[in-house]
Length: 537
Image 1 (cartoon, rainbow, N blue to C red):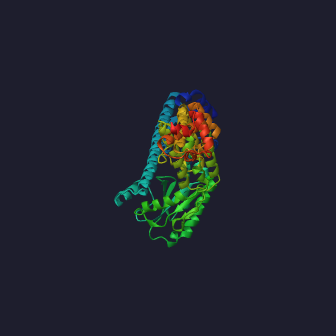
Image 2: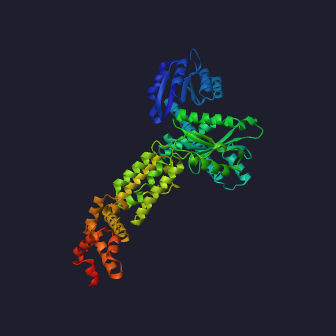
Image 3: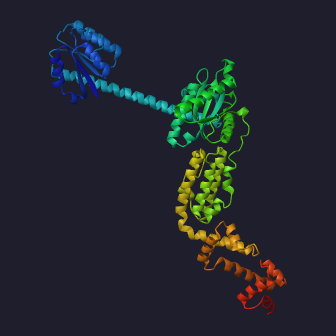
């Protein structure tokens, strides 16, 4: 909306114009009045005036002098002159001062409205052009950011481009780094504070971190930063040939890198870990340097705000190994999921992530946890005919969502979410789970009917409580597990009596009985005769 200032030492003139002109219809929001040039200047200091309408003849300063000051301080304000003097010199001077119109007093309302309408239309047209220009500039800069990002990603991944093509793109995208510069590469890994954010917030933080790097590594260095193809940020720092050799010294780079970390902590409240390559020639050796720093960064420990040079990097102590041992302790995730023990599965995952909490683990180790959990989910889902990708299309593939292994908190949240969806999906197949347990039990019994075969030993092997196992076996088969074991032993005894020449005491031992008399008693209960009588019939 338009803001207008009316200036005349005869206040009735400004009051008349303020009251009689249909300002709102013209698109004017506010009309201010001033009785002197000094008062007018004070108003313009406070308000965003678009159009100034001023008398020429005023006591302390003429309207022409007022316009001169306006032109100097507010060149975008449009100026209109009012006067009772039709002297050509006034008009000539007004034109020189770029006044947009010159009206004689007494002012004719229609002429004033016509002049004001023209000024307003010209203003709006100018503003529209300015908006289009700024939008074009913004779009161009946004496109350049995307193009710079894409080019950096291609070079990091080793895409073969000619030197001529790279040079043209660097100039076109306004990248300061140049061909044949001596370069080093920094891999930036975000700490726990950042990785706990949503994706859009992380992107903003990465952009801010890149800008801080540009400020820290100022002249004579050249900086090019962007999102790394895999995760984190990649920052290329180059030094042109012919500069002081001190810029290549590790001590200087270390000092600047530490300042970089400190500035990120001070302004963004989070930690970053840096892995720095040695110096190489840009862009020929960029892809090789990226692979090296990526491998090293992948082994850095979660939340570790470290500063590592590749040449100094040694294998880090695997402090997280003990924490992830919970994964492999029986009962395994696969078994718990297979048997439908959802509560026990949650407890196991809770114990796993509880051991990770507060423990320094690398992304490599988090990836191991991710693969193990994913394997269990996939195995059980596929075994029961469920398409797990429908439950989480992107999360099951770390290549699509690498943020899953950016922190143990995110991995735990994802695991809990998938488990909840999987449970809801497979609850209907609960009877299948129980039948699978029954099948396992029967296979165990059939493979070994010796002394070690009991309800307790079988329950241990399928990782269930003996009472719970007995309950579901009885409910699914109508026979107690103990009776089933005895029945299988008796059937085996019959087979051995018929098909072998083994002594009764040998059969007794093979079937897990220590006392032949007790075996004979059980056998007689089942078949109405002793083992010897059965063999002799």
